[in-house]
Length: 92
Ligand code: SF4
Image (cartoon, rainbow, N blue to C red; front, side, top):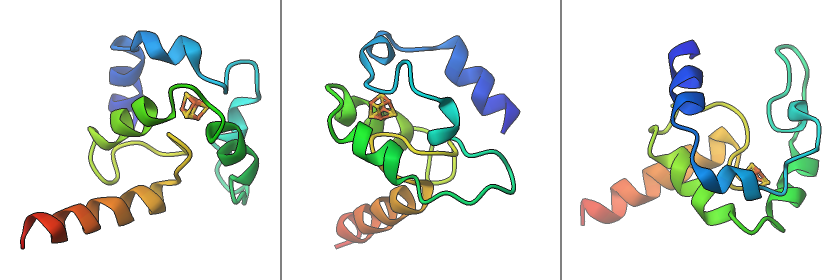
């Protein structure tokens, strides 16, 4: 996990500066361990973000479990679901 975080920060894309999440508490997207959150506040902010698709695409490049938290308005579980659906589509 630490390696991924470092990789993300080292290669921080420019579009991140346009994220609607800027200025909001980071824990809305990355709840601290042991804290239960459905992420709905973060997801609502993401859905009005001008770079939502770029953000989701970026997270998907790290694989189904590559990044924790909410990216592009989707939780890790939702991104895994997308991966599975894409794999199913590609296998047909
Ligand atoms: S989609 Fe969400 S997490 Fe991604 S940059 Fe926008 S507000 Fe931030």
